[in-house]
Length: 309
Image 1 (cartoon, rainbow, N blue to C red):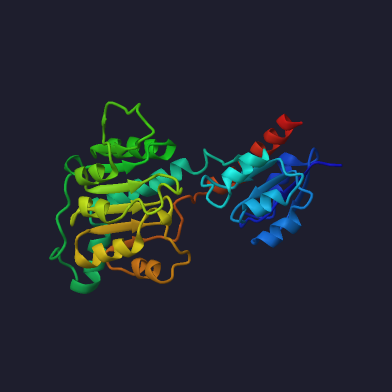
Image 2 (cartoon, helix red, strand yellow; image 1 turned 45 degrees about the vertical axis):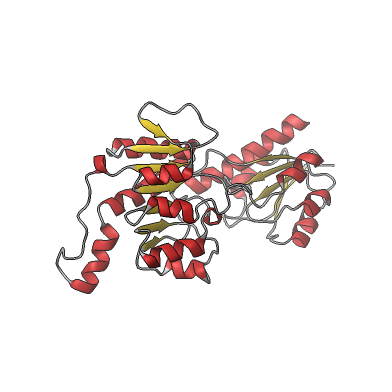
């Protein structure tokens, strides 16, 4: 029986890039499976799954008897039950070198745009006309510290860019001890927030990190503070963030991700707030990033199944 790889779901195209890597060694089929039942049906004889958003719960994973490997199109793995996969002996991988430069660029662009008051100045013009009245004078970058929560591959790229622009860089990451000499480490996220004007998030969404940016962190960031989120919407307590913006206890937020996408409820209120710069989850986007993601996901799957025999 041929080794069968199932693309469960993707908005990245017709699978031709993946087939270039995988065929003729493997059989590849392409589906639009977005629910547990649809994945169980599409993957009934699958040895490997290439998955974007489909839910790979314990029920799904245990219901696919041939499944040996899962590769997710992207970095986050929050739609996959990793503990269940480990118990079942299913290898799970992400594409951990995907869109590193793009997300770092977007985060630092958000910092720099707020440093130069670009959004505030543009919105002020529509209300007040051609005047600087009401626009706060920008700080020189050297007096405008940036905090990075999470010092993995993207966080390090953000630090490199921010440092090159002259911003002092501070970091919080409880799992990293090898900080460069030109960044300042902090023991807690609230401690980091209290030391900086811009706080940019680069941690995964896990049980431990969901809602990690709440009242204590936002209060520490303060009324001049700027929150940047290009990671996951679930990291932020959105009701608390909205209240802080309304009360003026936080200055501004640049959000590429929200808890609800497309936004509704509190997420929609945040997206429409006059002290929020919102972008529709585009930090990953470039002419190179998506084709690279498809090819790398297929290459990782090929290597996993080849190694497994």
